Length: 81
Image 1 (cartoon, rainbow, N blue to C red):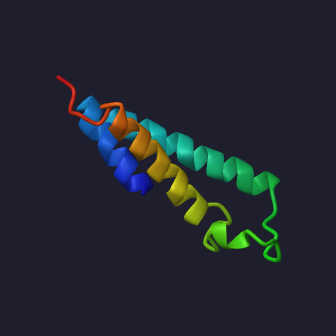
Image 2: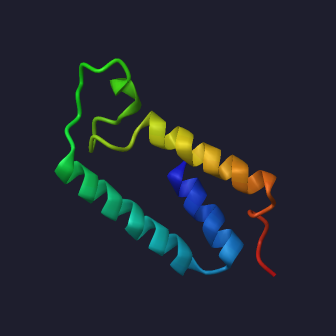
Image 3: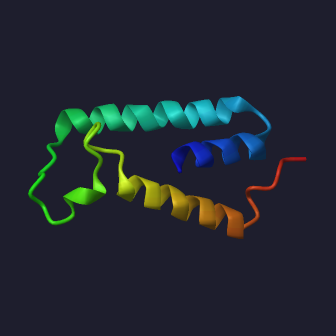
């Protein structure tokens, strides 16, 4: 879902730089929060967090889908120009 969101950003702006910047910001947030947080595997909602990095998972996919839906409904996903 995040890849789809980045692809829509690229389509909208006409340049790959916006998607690259968002991806760099995304990785920065992941690295910063991994260093300062701890995943509780026993928590009831732990299935929402991925096991790969303790960050990406179903919750992030749902959030990206919400962002795509909002952008789509407001017409932001049409190509620029």
